[in-house]
Every structure is written in structure tokens, then in C-alpha cells.
Amino acid sequence: MNYIEPHGHMVSRTTDDYERMALAGCQAICEPAFWAGFDRASADGFYDYFRQITEYEPKRAARFGIKHFSWLCINPKEAEDTKLAEEVIGLIPQFIDKPGVLGIGEIGLNKNSRNELRIFEQHVQLAQDYDQLVLIHTPHLEDKLKGTKLIVDALKSFPKIKPERVIIDHVEEHTIDHVLDQGFWAGITLYPESKCTPNRAIDMLEHRHAERIWMNSACDWGISDPLAVPKTMQAMRQRGWTPEMIQRVSYENPVAFMGQSGKFNL
Amino acid sequence: MDARSKLIDLAAFLDRVQRADQTADFRVQALKNAIALLSLDQPTRAKEVLLSFSDPSVEPIEKATMQGAIGAYRV
Image (cartoon, rainbow over all chains, first blue to last red; front, side, top):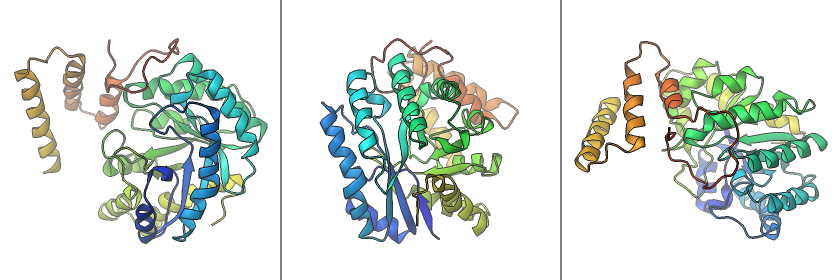
């Protein structure tokens, strides 16, 4: 069955992973800009990174018949250095019109600091100015609840940002209702350890009737699984989901959200 | 079987922590508080466990002094 990987950091993955994902039915991969596992020393590093995810990765994916799309930002882990962050934000407009760029992301918060919040708001302003979709990262573990609430509150200060054009990712049982009840889309991340298992993801999807929700692997350089989405689709089959229900979450929902960009063509 | 296995693994972990005399660690205390929530009578246990580990404050902190998360809020 075909599916979309709406959140994968393919710069950290091997070409073998592209092949395995293609064999599993992956039609498109969307790559948000993120933390490289270390802090970059200058905006020049981000310029090269933006070229990598907007020019090089689409070619690598195309070898396996997979479409590749991207999102641009400086991630919240590097936002405490506001001078660097503002320089990187200044680079984004020259990449924003590239054919595979879907919007601004994954922006958000990490430790819920004032500087992170300031840089988050500058990204949202950029999205508003350029009429872009927004993909938001929520903090890890004990910081997620507070960060999710701060993010939702901050978004209310931008009247032109429509909730249906924003996805708040990495939700779990204690944050999903807050996100969906405010009209935003929600992303469920399938991680072997720190985020969500297939069965927990399916529980949440059943609880919320799969409304405005996508699921992703967020595969990166850490402990993660680029096949987490098709493995969860298999778990859905085992729990009695119909093919139509599985297709809605793993394919139609990502198409519905990212199709709003006008560039998400399969 | 899966849940049984995970429960026994958790029990063994707490035994190991106790033998190492680390039960005062705030993360162990947070874990024990969360385990008590498994006895709730509503189908919201996962949510309640996650809430019990969460930072309840509402204001942004002045400055991030680390990049990672620990797993439980230090009261």
C-alpha cells in the first residue's frame, strides 16, 4: 500500500534507506530543517544545508521514484544564539520559491526559553509574510506540555496564520487534544524510545477519529526507524482497520495538509 | 505477554536501582508516582502518566542552559 513519509531527515540516512522505503510503498518524503546533532558555527553552514535539502536530496530520492520536499528554518536547539538565528532566518527568502519547498519548519521550542520563543515568533512572522505553511516541533519529554501550550498561545498573536495551515508535530496523549481542539493539524511521531509506539499512535488515532492527523517516523541520525510508518500500517491491519482507513491516515491526510502549499505534486 | 514482560522489566529496574542505593533520585521518585497512576479507573492512564512527568510551569525560562531533556520534571 502506498504511503507518504511526511517527516524524515534524510540527510542523516543512507541511500539503502531510500531503497527500503521505496520497496515499502513510500511515494514522497518531506524533510524539515533540523538540528544536525551539533551546533553549526555560522550561517554559511545553514546555506549549504538548505542547498542540500532543496537541491541534492530530491535527486537522491528520485533515483528510487520517491518525490522529495523540504521545509526551511533554524531549529529551536540552535535558537538560543539569536544573532546566528536571525542571520539564518535572513537566508530563507532566497530558497522559499524553490519547487520542493513546502513552508517554514520545523520551528518551535526546545527548552521553552525566551530566546527560543522570540526566534519562533520571527519564523511565524516570516511564514505570515510569505503566506507559507508551518510545521512545528514540540519539545521533548518533560518539556513538551509546557512548550505546546506556549506555542499555541504564541500562534494566536498572528491573526493571518490560519490553524488549518499549521501542523504541530510530536503530539502525545497529553497534548493531542489541546492541539486539535484549537483547529491545528497534529503529527504523531513513531520513535522506538522517546516518542510514540505504533499501538499508542493507533489508540490516539482511534480516539480522535483520525481527524487532521498524520504520522511520521522523523527518522534522523538518532535511534529511529525509516520504516516506522509502514510498520504502523501493518499494526493497523492487525487491529482490524480497513484499507480505506489506513490509506486516509498514511496518504490522504498528508496530501490534504501539504497540498495547501500549491507545490505538493505527486 | 508484551505488557507482562514490560512490567517485569520495570520491576527489575526498580530492584536494580534500590540495590545501587539510588532510590532518592528525583527521576526514580517520579517513576514511582507515575506507577501509582496505573491503578486509576479511567482509560486516561497514558495521559495521566505523561502529565505527571511534565513541567507544570507556564512562563518561559530566561535562558536554556542545556539542550536535552531528562524525562521527568525536577520539583
